[in-house]
Length: 89
Length: 267
Image (cartoon, rainbow over all chains, first blue to last red):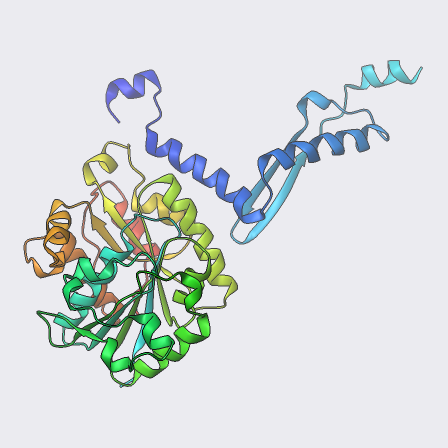
């Protein structure tokens, strides 16, 4: 990568290729396409919201892989306490 | 002697399976091994033209399987090398003409007379691929440094694992060192990171392969061909020799990474 590329913060195409491959292979290996992950996300939000107030805009669900273990990782922030308190009154 | 059956496969088409099969066949035969190459691509036969033997075909794989000729009659002797043979694919049939059990039986019948049986798999993951890997002791997966080819290689690795075969080994074909150096082509290190598989060869993009294929004389026979040298190295690794990987993409840390990832070849 040249000095000017660094200056512009360019990412070379091989790096993009590697990152896209890693992501697509995680989904291929789990036989779980990204679209289904979106559907799961919506269902999960609906279910959880019946029990607890969550910050739906910031829910993050991803498939990850380390070695041979694939993992569904969900980061589910709760709604700010003040907002929750106000709704419960 | 009892032959080792090695299948060359890829998932994606056009990555160089047939070229690799022809070159490895010639490299092994040149090194003194008795070799038979089987074209597993029934309906789209091509190993014959890459080896330059298309004018000698009388019988084919399907004729043997269906009992229209003896196995011996379908073995085409190479023009140049005494210990190299080809069993061509049928051109006017399809992959369902042969079953995985047929392939296992055929290879069993060949094992006594050869050191290596090389099987050129068709692209895809259907019947032809199943046929090609059924008798394999060693599976070589060919890929190019491209997202699509690497993705398909990963699928093949999964299918091979499900068959409880020996772990496959990877050939990275058509590497352009200049593009790798400037960061516009996946490096072999990148591909190994993603696929988590043992490497058995890195073959550079080389115009001499096109010339060789035009003439029906595999590049391995050209002492000046860089790709030919890479295939000779792979043949040596297939026989358990430890051959260092050439510095095609000399880059900081490349060798350090490779030496950690790579173990000696062999079945």
